[in-house]
Length: 199
Image 1 (cartoon, one colour):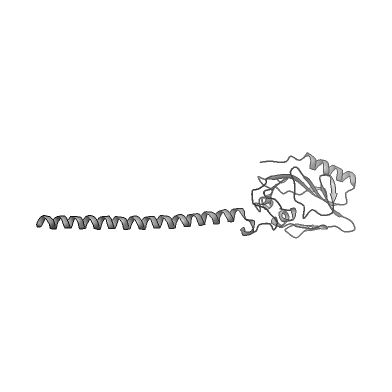
Image 2 (image 1 turned 120 degrees about the vertical axis):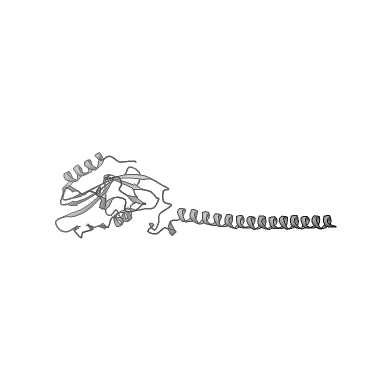
């Protein structure tokens, strides 16, 4: 009789232990399932955030994915014959989309499709249109009766560069003053001699 009770208690204990073990296993499997689901949702949200420019604050309006291109072009800006220096910290890497970097003020790096020069200048707080080049401190260089703001892309004169999307090895000249064609040709030659930094 004592044996039967003991066996019965052992069976109850074993039953209770296996029941408890099954409950822990079920609870753990549910927790793993829920955490896996959360992980998948977070991974998908991160992927969407990284690949969609619409969700990134400050993204250019018509840009593709950040990093889908890495284009290099050379720029020279001359104001009354003096070279404007984009190599200073005030003009270096103001946005990831398009910028000057590594203390190089000659090479533009564009890191996404659809990013125009207007976005570059806006990021550096330089106001630019077809008539005026305005420094962040407010100094203005505008076309008037005596001086002219001119733009050249790959040796060709253009009226405006704001909506231009730089292509690999482009050479862009912005010049302000009363320079004749000989002086412009010298500036274009200086631009062509600039090294394009592809790092």
